[in-house]
Length: 175
Length: 146
Image (cartoon, rainbow over the protein chains, first blue to last red):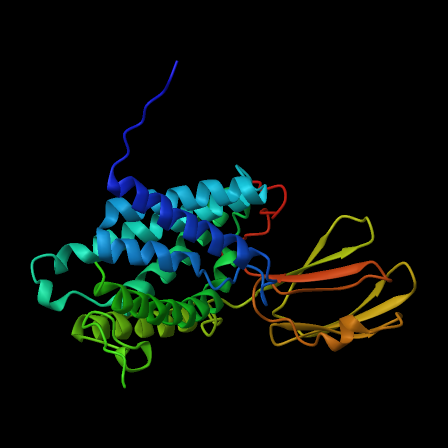
C-alpha cells in the first residue's frame, strides 16, 4: 500500500521556516543565559517574519511546530519548560493578532517589524510569567521579577525587531 | 569592468536603513510608559502598609507574637545563647546574638510587612507582619499550596 500526500507550495514554505526556527531554537538553547528566564528568543524572529510576510495562520503553524519539535529534540516535551514555551508563543501571537486588528483598516500606518517585535516579546514574557504563576509558583512575589523581565524584553525585542526588519527588507525583492 | 547588477538584488551594506513609522512610535511610547509603571508599582511602592506586630520563633517552640507599638529590648534564649532584639518605632532588629557570622545583626531593621530574618545557629527567626496586609506566607514554590 502506498500513501500519497499532495503537498502544496505553502506546506513546503512552512516546513522550511519551521526547520529554520527549530535550528535557531536548539542552537540558542546551547548557550547559557545570564539570568534564569532571560533568553534572546531569536527563534521568534522567524515567527515574526511569518506573521508579517504571510499572515497569522502561517505564523501559528510555524511557531507551534517549532515549540513541539524542538521540545521533542531537547527532551523537554510536556515538561514545565515546554508549557512555558508554548504559552509564551501562543500569547505573543495572540497579542500580535489583536494589535494588528485596528491597523487592518489603515494599512498605511501598519507598525513595522520593530513595533510588532516589542509587542511580541513583552506579551511572550507576560504569558510565561502568568503560566508560571498559575501552575508552578502561585506566589504574588513572583511578579516582583516583572520589571527585570520587561526591561530585557524591550531590549531584546528591539534587537529582534531590527533583525526581522533586515530579513524582510532583504527578502522582499525575491518574493 | 563592473559586473552588472540585477535590479532586485542590491548589495546588503547600502540596502538596509532602519524604518520606524508613527505606529511604531506609539507602541514604543506605550512600552516605555508600561515599563515605568511596572517599576513604580512593583518596586518603589513599598510603603503600602506598615508592620504592626512581629512573630518570633525559637527552635521548635510555638511562635510568639509581639506588638511593635512599644519600644523595648527582648532577650531571647536560643540554642547557643542569648539574642537581643530591639523593637523601636515600628521596626525590629537584632542588636546582639551569640553566633559567629552575625548575619542577623547585619541584616538591620525590619519594617515592611513580610520582612524576615533569622539567626540560624541560635535557631531564632523573626518576621514582621501587618494585620491589614494580606498574608502570603502559605504559598510555597514547591508545594504550590493554595
